[in-house]
Image (tube, rainbow, N blue to C red):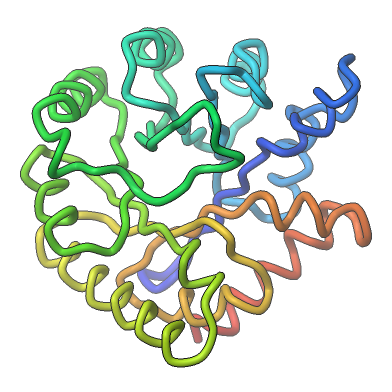
Length: 244
């Protein structure tokens, strides 16, 4: 893989959402992870929420035991989640904001406002050789604070970009581009994700500082119509074409 290669992390949360709608074991997030690997995913992302609304503790145990791809564990910065992360030692942990009433993650972490709290989590995780990512908006102060507390990575929140149109969309894209440049200059690896689909992934994939995209909900939804293998391979095609 060349330095310009853009990695794809496939988020399997919503395979678990479908399973949990009726209980039981089908469809299996672990099976989805194996399919994603065969389809060309570079990593697997799973968010173990405090309310366990989709991914379960057993899912994380199975993923750690049975997949060869790096696991990116998304988690809130809580003592419970820290203990789970230290027990499993995934390749990376992405600290995300979490509110019980939200449908999905809304906006990025407030690193500036929670600097001291987050710094301890970053430090402890890194002491155990776990890479630490912070899910943030493309705000210069949040990016600077992320570097100051020692994060390895920031994941830029692309949800707003995906929702906007016209000039507002282009302004948000410019903010993401500028944020990615600043982050790289500060020594941070840059990832991006949230809300991306075939129509929106291109402009984000073109940002040279971005090394990885994490995409899930759209891929799982598209899989209903075309299959998981094809949804992932098509996304890979759009990413590669944009990167060139």
